[in-house]
Length: 485
Image 1 (cartoon, rainbow, N blue to C red):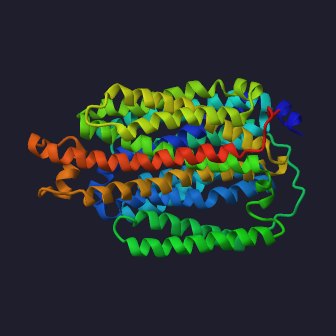
Image 2: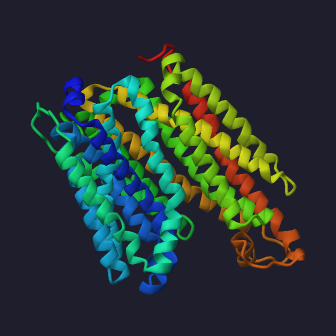
Image 3: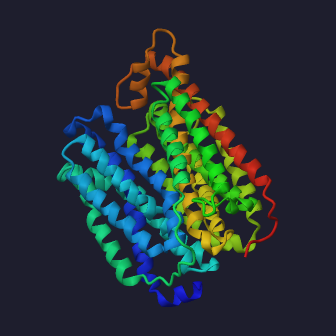
């Protein structure tokens, strides 16, 4: 069946569609972030500004596993076309939004579309390229993600300065139309629906409630701790009821059978935790460099860019690595190297060499590029063909949740440690000014404030080091000791 797909499709057209779709959804984050100040100013939306990103993230997280199941039941083409159409319409409505509340609703619509597009790009690659080719094709597609990270802020800044923030959303409309045309005319799918579609409404309800309460708890973690804890308890109960429902339901949303394979489960857990580690580096390396070493915003941004470039380069070697080495051994070596690099940050003082941050960033890109690419390939390969869409959506959901959850935890820990260490009449606002890096702070205040920030950052990366150690221990239990073919 896979061979027939590969022969009947123009794989060049499919890859063009997948590449553009990947760029379109990934650039959405970087380009919108650049435009946020202009949006908030014009729409008077400071009180709701966090929801501009959260609404998109929330609907993406909720719909991702649902689309994965639908893609396995109804076929990839229909669901992918639907996702691109909804994302494109959401982009158009976002650009036309006259108020902050309508913009948030439009962003939620965008997320509903992205929930289909993001995982199905990986699934379509798995359908149309065999196991030996898949690593190189995924690496090629990763260049779309890397390109979005590099040019997104530049495009966003240009559009806001020369036109208006509305064009930050409009720019995705022609890209969405192009993807629709490429898929409509160039992607032929020989998919036979062997089972009747049965909607697991109860499972969807419990999963949605769990995800919504989780993300809401993270949003208010800094301001309303008690309510956040209550929401976290509701989330845990919801996820527990979801798991019970999936075990009992005949055609579950996320089949527990996938997780009977311990190696598959380890891939999902690994990518979830590593995604949480990744967001810590992306956010707090630039803060460290700007606030404590007075590195310019551009110079601090290069620390993220260097990692992205190395990630792309490393991913091209994953195919050879998988064909020659046992995945478990590769991960254990890579993660051990990453652990050693991050441990050095716990001992970094105010005289720590700046160039070492760039060295650690490059090493971070190398490890993430190899390990996360392997997680993607193996999670698709280790399940039955009828579950590839669901497996990919679970992996994508893990990546999203890892970053979202840890963003909230890192922020709460940083703020808590700063508040606990305030002394000598220093206020939280003064520390905030130093972290902003653009404010002028006298040397006397810096001598008091810098150690406070350093302690807080040490705590954040202490969490990161613990998470890396957990990844290493989890992969140590992987029962697979052979090269996967």
